[in-house]
Length: 219
Ligand SMILES: [Zn+2]
Image (cartoon, rainbow, N blue to C red; front, side):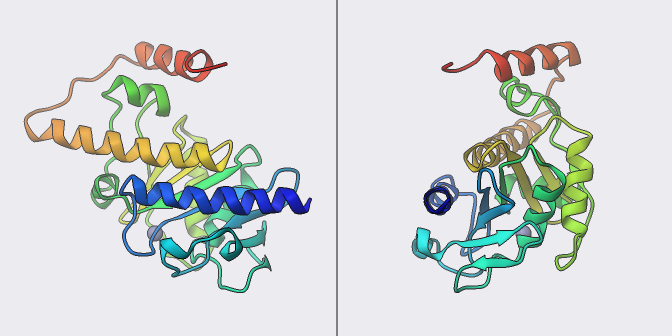
């Protein structure tokens, strides 16, 4: 059990560097969490700590109510939202939150990102949906994430006027979804500057999604 917790501390710590590498975060905003396999616990970053200082030892272990079990620092202010998602979506093993600029610009308008790229059909299986406006400090953000994701194949959601939340089978998959979400948000934003992007037929979106989810990559 100890080694599982330690390896999740290391994994979540290292994945925070990916948020910086892909320009998804400013200052101390953004967070990654990972469910500790076989337990009702997850690892998340502390609140307000520089990305350079997010070493494995600084990570916080919480239960699924978001209460701190291990760690000297306060957990991320988004811990309640992560905990809510883990409670309600047992298939989720990782959650990421960012204010990545292009995706958050769509969130500011409350506009879903339309599925007009094959890479987007692959990863998201359709539009990236918008969740409700919700204030931090209760289960409202978590509730909005879960309700919106349940009606979608997308592992990413734009919370209105706020930013991006993504989920995955593990923390790395959730980080990948956050990187891809920003990538398609930027490309489709650029496309819109000179015209209206062309839609992809739903049957083609379905085929692309099925192939990518079930066939693509190394087996
Ligand atoms: Zn936020």
